[in-house]
Length: 320
Image (cartoon, rainbow, N blue to C red; front, side, top):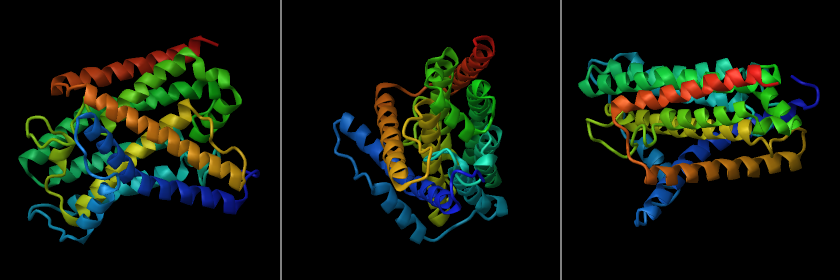
């Protein structure tokens, strides 16, 4: 624990981050759906509709395939739990969250990977063709998107001389000139591609489709129902908010609280809400303008993100 921040302030920051991610995830998904519907000439459901859907699912009976083991039931819990840990330790609102010393970029990427693998194992555990197909496709995409995310953030750690994400954010605020360097721009593009791939958005996946020849994420969760399906949907929306918030704080860190105080925290809350909302709207507008890629073209996109991330690291090491 650092000395500048008192323990109650650090605890309050972490609680706010967790509550913001839990409530903000479904609301962001609802906002993106609303934007897409408006752009397509439709009225669309209200922004808070995902929250109503989660409440409805939580009240329904939970069913499980006869051949499924405990892995099937544990996968949604692991998905939500790993995302909550990231929301707890990541510098979403302040540069000194609880257990910020443990928010190493390798640890955060590992936690994201654990959630993805758990969901894929849950899909395989059902023994159905759709579950196996969705898990295979998801792991094919994740095999390149997760390393690209790791290398992209690694490029940001070179000038900061640390792989600790709160330290990277704090030193980026102290050196604004770093934000316009070539490695930052390359990492920015790679990070955006990873966000699209990890969250299952267009052009990588279409979250609103149920066509067996094209769906990826939906194929993995077809067997879930009731509270299990509610956890899956909540976990996926939380991951989207966490990724967008990390992107905003790493590349546009202004507004992150660097000192304790109600005023600083209030500004941080408004800033992160505005940045994540803007990114979500931009992503929704982008989805309307593009078409889904063929499955065999998706690895080319994620491989491109990995190459950009590697170039960012090389640039960070070569350019002073």
